[in-house]
Amino acid sequence: MNHSAKPVLLSAYRFFPSLGGLEQQLWLIAHELISRGFQVEVLTEKHEPNQKSMELFDGIKVIRLPFVKNRHILNQIYLAGLIAIFLWRNRGRYQFALVRAALTLYSLVFGLLKRLKILAYPTWVSADTGGDNDEVIQLRSWPMANYLIWAAKGNSIVNAICFDNQLHFLQLGFLQKQISTINNGVKIETYARNHYPSKIRRFVYSGRLIKQKGIFELLAAFALCQQQVPACFLSIVGDGPEMSNLIKLVENLGLKKQVKFWGKIESNKMAEIYAQHDCLVLPSYSEAFPMSVAEAIVAKRLVIATDVGEIRRFYGKQVIYCRQRDVEDLSAQMIAAVQNYQSNQLNYDAFIEKLDIRQVVDRILATLQVNR
Image (cartoon, rainbow, N blue to C red):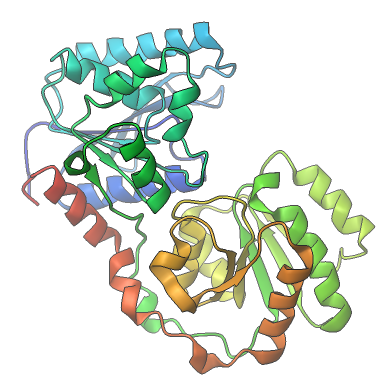
């Protein structure tokens, strides 16, 4: 079905082949829109020297602006200018725009141009981080914050993917009627044929390798777990600045045979990874609506996570919770999972439909009053 001769614009500072949750969610939304007959274009940045400024990738037209690594004020102004020029030149081209990473530079430029009536189409801007210091509330610390907040309010809809986002939008003066609360989504087609694990022996972490994800605590906790239940293993999926330090820590802990680093894995291969493991562990200091947990739920894996973001509100008692930055508590939860897990304790049927990317896109389009 051809919804409009005009394409749809998706925008964020990163896009495929980057492999973070933001990029993955944008990719899934893009393909769901394409399946419905929409033409999709993506405005992002060039993060690798060999990336083209413009290319058609898997049915998506990707436009990449020059990457600005050092985001000091002059470079921010330069990048904002590039975004604004692109949007002004294409001001009548798009049917609507979906922007990820709320109240970052992209959404501010969209909002400002909406305020100036240069852009007439509706814009939906979604947050992507959670916690007390998410990207929404961080705007308060920017120079000329009041003017930037004024610009951000020019967007049609701002979206909260966790309660922290919603609270911070309200604190910044956004009206409740301007705020949507649409969670992240994933493909759920494999859920019905997946099976819950019969026992817990193979743990997996999936995400960026940064300190804030609790990855060092995970390795320390796994070392304690090994002392009591040596027949268990841990896989680390992802890449990031702490990779070399984590490899050294594994060597120092004497766990080279029990811990495997997989590096970057494309999102469409993650189902295969989960099929080889029993339990996802995410001891993050801060999250909003983590994609790794949603993927593990679809794969019917056990989940151990910190009580952050929207995890408890969405999944309730179906997730095992550990305390933040607490190695002993995390280890205790992992040991208990190995020793006490019963396959009949899990049932994700109650919320699996809410994770469906098709339902997520339905809700986005309904919010924008676009014919689905």
